[in-house]
Image (cartoon, rainbow, N blue to C red; front, side):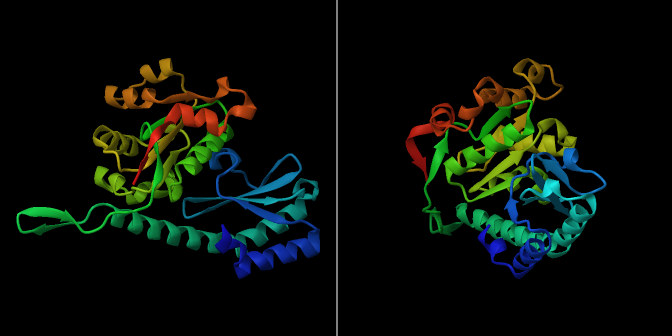
Amino acid sequence: MNDLMTDAGWIKANSLIKEKYGKSLSYRAIKLISAQDAENKTGFYSIGDDLVIPLKLKDYNLGDIIVSRGSVLDQQQKSEITDLVKFLIEPKLYNMQLKKQEENIVKAKSHTLSLVDDGDEIIALYSSEKSTRKTLSQVILLKSHTELNRNKVALKIHEMTERNLFVHLDDIAASLASKEDFSSLTDITIYIDDIERLSGKTLELLHAYMDTAAGDGPLILVGSNLTMEAIGQKNWSEGLKKDLMGFYFDIDRVPLSQQTSEEILELLFFDLDSTMT
């Protein structure tokens, strides 16, 4: 996120941490592991040599700050860096993400056809000229026992579609009151970390949208560790289960080095003969 890299708070935090601890920061918008799994009293955890500081404010998951080789620091130093990141970067990132989501939701809604009665006919006032790569389905289920693998594949599919924004359903669920709200998000990829974690209300709303979805709505990528047999046994509507099993990618059956292969994902999920405008 270029805006973050040029922000005064980011520059100040990076400079202080580099000067005092000899470490540098980087930012990842997609979380390495779920917020629930990462949550602990310290506010940080380690992956390999790196220190990871999950960012979350007002129930918005904001991604992770990665402190390069930060795991070698002592506990006090890790806590000091975490406090600095939470103070200087987290609030700014929250405001930036919120503004970006608002701008893109407004933009997405403006891309839907605005209609006016012109005598005897209805004409379109506006339509987007942006071209995106069309998927064979607006709903794709990504099955893996490893949440990180699901996240990586979801982000890769999003990048391949060239859609404008990648959002976690948890982060926008409060603003979605109807299936029409879903339909208005035309240039967005909505990612569900784990469908079993959705509330009954959100699941019902998701099904209502999927049941009537047209071709110009958001792309919905659904994460899960459920087999097709397990989905079939769920106490969900038959329509929802059918939608989830229609385009089902068992990531764990593909070699790790090929899980985000554009060639494989293109063959599985993309319409090779057309684009969507």
